[in-house]
Image (cartoon, rainbow, N blue to C red; front, side):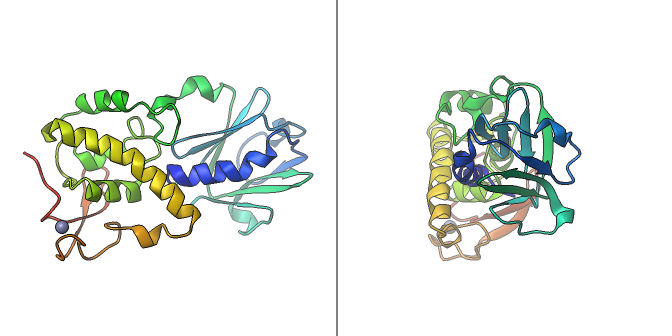
Length: 245
Ligand SMILES: [Zn+2]
């Protein structure tokens, strides 16, 4: 599933289509395609793992779920997985195996943009306040909470925990104050490293914990466990990632 930074890459790729008119819309998404015909793209937004194509009076909301993908210019997957294709005079956008919905509301007023780690309005203080209100939550679950860290996915979770030397099962309420500040800072910082590395095609090369077998710092085997309520694959070192009590 694409994490927040990957959607920023998509947004940048689709920006040239702003102001362009949709000549034809097709695909097997259960939406009224007629509403899209002859509409101009007014704006492109991302909120975490959601992608918005804003038209006049209606917005296309795309969520890539677990196996969603896209292509620009050419169709790269079969028709049965094609949820939406938007055709323009200058090219086409294809979205596969994703959730596509039409929204009548303006996304600007529906979402907390200060919770989006990639957004220029990201508000670290607000994130801290939300974390303080969930002392019994494990840090591995808190990082995946889209209301706190919108855009953070499982890879980012694993890397941020490793960077900050936090054990994934530490409860938020047990994390020392300075460490909590570090967690919030590093969560955002890693997202921008992710973005940069992904653009340079060296993202995987820079993973320190995700899918790794050995801790670089300790030269000991990493643990792989499905931690927390979210039960997502978690890779961590029991030796250098501290479980605060
Ligand atoms: Zn270690």
